[in-house]
Image (cartoon, rainbow, N blue to C red):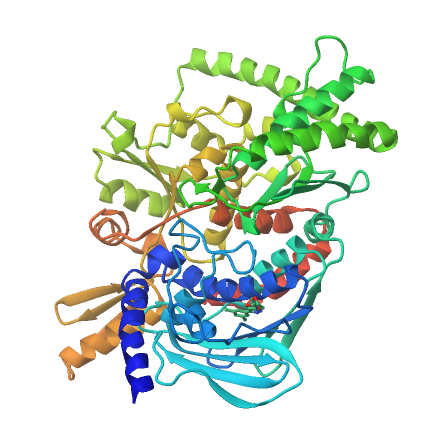
Amino acid sequence: MGDVRRYSEQDIQVLEGLEAVRKRPGMYIGSTGSRGLHHLVYEIVDNSIDEALAGYCERIDVEILPGNVISVSDDGRGIPIGIHPKEGISALTVVFTVLHAGGKFGGGGYKVSGGLHGVGASVVNALSEWLEVTVDDGQKTYFQRFERGKYHEPLKEIGTTDKTGTKVVFKADSEIFSELEYDYEIVLKRLREQAFLNAGVRIVVSDRRGDEEISEDLHYEGGIKSFVEYIHKKRGFETLHEIVYLKTQTETSQAEVALQYNDSYNDLILSFANNIHTTEGGTHETGFKNALVKTLNEYGRRCNFLKDGEKLIGDDSREGLTAVISVKLMETEFEGQTKTKLGNVECKPMLENLISEKLTDFLDENPAVAASIMEKCLVAKKAREEARKARELTRRKSSMDGASLPGKLADCSERDPSLTELYIVEGDSAGGSAKSGRERKYQAILPLWGKMLNVEKSRLDKVYGNEKLMPVVTALGTSIGEDFNISKLRYNKVVIMADADVDGSHIRTLLLTFFFRFMKPLISEGHIYLAQPPLYRLTCGKKHLYAYSDSERDQCLKDMRAQKPDAKIGIQRYKGLGEMDPDQLWETTMNPENRVMIRVDMEDAEAADETFTILMGDKVAPRREFIEKNAQYVQNLDI
Ligand code: TTJ
């Protein structure tokens, strides 16, 4: 009896901690949409990765099971099952029911046996309809089941075993999440990244939901070197030299960098802190970039690649560069819009020293590699200087014309940029509706026209003079590349409004890639949005509702039928923005009171950049692979 009472009191106490998670899930996992759902998987897998990094686990299995159930198992030592001295219950139960100070989104930090992660097992438990843990400790098998974070029975012995390991199986709670369907490609991408960042760890990921099982064995002895190699293969780039790998370590931290130049004109720098992708950059990335250009300038001058007075700027030193930076620290501080910007001040000098000392050594020891890097940078420098000259010429011409804003721009009357919005609209008919439907005081419309530019193969100079992108640049007012100046931004919100079909997705990808490459702060500072026009209009008598997804349409249908079982319901599917009249467009997509907009973050933009590279590049194989993988999606969009 005493035992039962103790557990029920525990229940109540536990409930209070985890109830906070259920009340405000966004605080702990960022969102309750698809991203938050996938986050659950990563939170659990992180624990097994810690065990692998501690040297006790060789293999981690991650399975997506029918019904969108997730199973994660490892062959580590197993979560301790002993009675926790303070709580009086099994340590395992504590791990799953006591909310540890913060997590990635709450600040603070909690470490398992010197591991690097904030452990979110209790958060995942709180947000799962049910969760089951099985632990093998080499002698016995233990089991406990939870429902929405609560347990009815304590941890119990269920058998004997000679193995060790932990297995967690869970189903996300439909009361919490708006989306329950896992995307295998998203899970795979993230776990592959983790396998690269933790050299030697083996992660086997599989999808058992379909008729055919899909599975991938992720295991990279080369770590972040393999990461750079993989990126270049996937994007279809020719590389200019072998991969450069540099590493430094202190008692409590480490930093490593892998880099390689390719034949393209764009750079891709991926940075991580404690295996978390820092999409907004931060001190480690800044230290790296500063030291890279400084080191190349010093080497270039010393070895006569640069004449007296000649100097590379940052952009020159990064043209065609792919780099992965990974730091591992005892304590991390994250800042920025999406808490993905590393704030630890010690990382800037750490990366600066790593690059200026070890990259210099590497260049001295590998003169052939050094020469191809220097030549790449010098070509970039020359092209930049020529482009600047050409640009100044066109500028002088256009200022004489007095044509400073694009002709098709329907500007707003408000002059305070913090209050204004620019809608970039593909297609003339949609542009017309947007112009009539808008609130002209603070909403401006820029219809796009003309042929797309292949930004992949071009440098900045080609962007100037491109009839599709130039109007965007002049309307925004910030200029691009080295001249970019965010204080000149003419609109606080820049909204891309395109159809929900293949063409629309192309224009979104193009614009996001363009902003990502040439106007990055627009994205990192949260100025770019995607409009979300409705897909359906449902009418029932005089009432109408708009639905923004298929599942929302079904919900609306259900609600309408429940209210008026006998009435006839009409469903109109919008094939494009052009089908909406100005009032409808205003009501559903542009009116701040009702509209749904997605704010684009660096992760979205990075994904667009990758898609763009594959679609626009000149290599056929990566493109074919992309189209095959996304065939389903493309079809769905096309109906
Ligand atoms: C902790 O220190 C004593 C030995 O075991 C360590 C431990 O907790 N190891 C461990 C935890 N291995 N795997 C986990 C784990 C795996 C999953 C899938 C989920 C969770 C919450 C932990």
